[in-house]
Image (cartoon, rainbow over all chains, first blue to last red; front, side, top):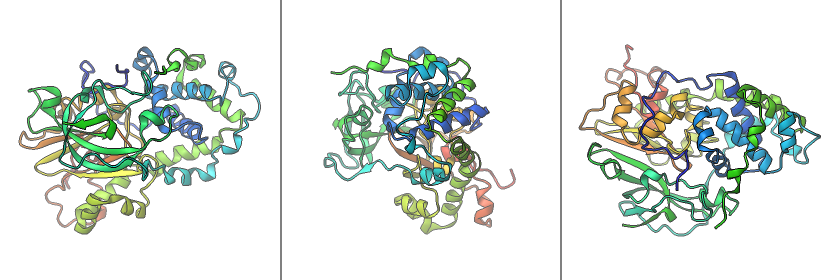
Amino acid sequence: MTRVHDMGGRFGDGAVDPSDNAVFAKDWHARALAVTLAAGALGQWNIDASRHSRELLSPKDYGRFSYYEKWLSALADMLVSQGVITEEELRSGTGQGESPISAKALKAASVAATLSKGSPYARTEAPDPAFQAGDRVRTRRPSRNTLVDGGHTRLPAYAAGATGTVKLLHGAHVFPDANAHGFGEAAEPLYAVAFSARDLWGQEASAQDEVILDLWQSYLEPA
Amino acid sequence: MPHDHHDHDHPHALLPPDPALRVKALETILTDKGLIDPAALDEIIDTYQNKIGPQNGAKVVAKMWSDPEFRAAMLSDPMPLLEEMGFYGRQGEHMVIVENTDDVHNVVVCTLCSCYPWPLLGIPPGWYKSDAYRSRVVREPRKVLQEFGVNIPEETSVRVWDSTAEIRYLVVPKRPAGTEGLDEAALEALVTRDSMVGTGLALEPAQ
């Protein structure tokens, strides 16, 4: 049921390399980030749709692409699927005529204001919280989007079907499973849920260790 | 149930294979269409290269170490204070601050993508976005921390925060011994980026 990006707990990736610590290891990395943010500012998609477009890369591409190559490929795919540019323009490498939405282009003078304004995801209109801190809850299994087959979801496979304890109530937040697919924000209560490392990974994990995930109400049922 | 039709439709294959040329191609197309102002790109890069980075988070940590009232407020309701300090913005709209103690060591990851508190730490480093970190730190955090040179005593609990929503986590490292006389500016210099993700500790004053 999962996609390639859902890699928590996977074996085989080898050691982490702490010396890989540059923010932009190459000049084009910075440019890729900037083009992606500037294109996002056109307002033609939301953050959940943009995450999902990276998840839609084939496992082969996801594995061989470097981080910012994933961003660029997903950006190109979204620009075409949203009708912002055409396949012909991608093929030729040049844009044909002014876009009808060019007035939305992010100007240098508004960059600071746009980045510091942010985009809050908390909402007041939502179902009442069904759980309180300390409640035992079980997550959905398998982890899946129930609205779209293969759609976006934020319940990692490694935590599907697990029982944990509600630690924090974050209030209601935009629901990515709906928002990524144009079904509206459908805000739901969001919780930080703590799982014992042993419940997730077995007896080799330390008994006192925990993994905490932020999970939406519809991923959870009382345990 | 509807299918994700994009699965069979990948226009990105039309771009040139060299990634630097791919960026250039997209920038050119979007600029030709009036959708991108190249000067805005320079401004975005300058922001994340020079203005927003771990120095912001270090200010917050040093102030929490020095000012008990500020610390208490940051742990219970950080957003108003962060806005006041100018540390609000994209990818930092909903911060939760977690504190390392003798009993608990916190470490942050995003197993599904690369969520990270931009206004406080800037853009994440390569290792944070690597498959090895994303896949392993939830399953074997103590081993991964050892790869960063950090050994967590068995009696200390390790708490891994997987950033699966728009909540962003900042770790407050333990204040090193022997720093009692230091002012906030001197303390800031001890707070590394990795210590605020949980893969490092704050520096000792002599280091």
